Length: 154
Picture 1 (cartoon, rainbow, N blue to C red):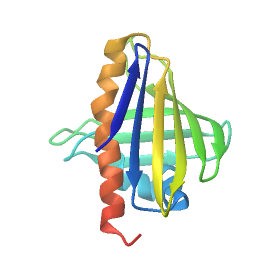
Picture 2: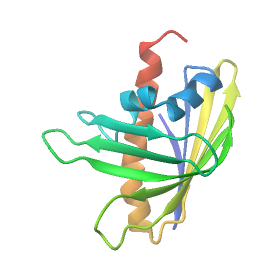
Picture 3: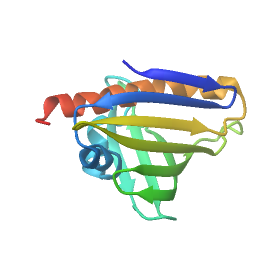
Picture 4: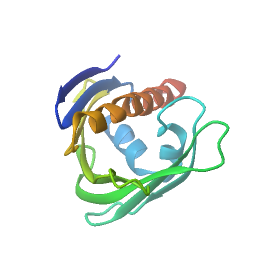
């Protein structure tokens, strides 16, 4: 379903979604929509989605694994915002783990005849193992995004 490419310190995933660029962009930037799809696997819920959509603004997303009581959270800062075209933001897991590094995510949105191709690039990993831990999570998120649009009219 998704096309993937890797370097030792980055990953790139491409997918096409049944919605306009505007709707897909909004799914990445509106808290009520993020809560519906931004989770790494089925069974997770997203009780927290905070978005200050401006360059220098912060975001914070909290995901609750199935049968768990403690939320895992990621946060960062928007570096670049081009409505319906591109989002660039930092990515940091909220954790006591000293291996947690700040990375960079770029999400590009391309019109494909009424559908939208999303190209997600996540880079600046310290090592391939850190990159590999994010691949399945992003695939889960993008699968949730596809499901969001499959439930709605295009």
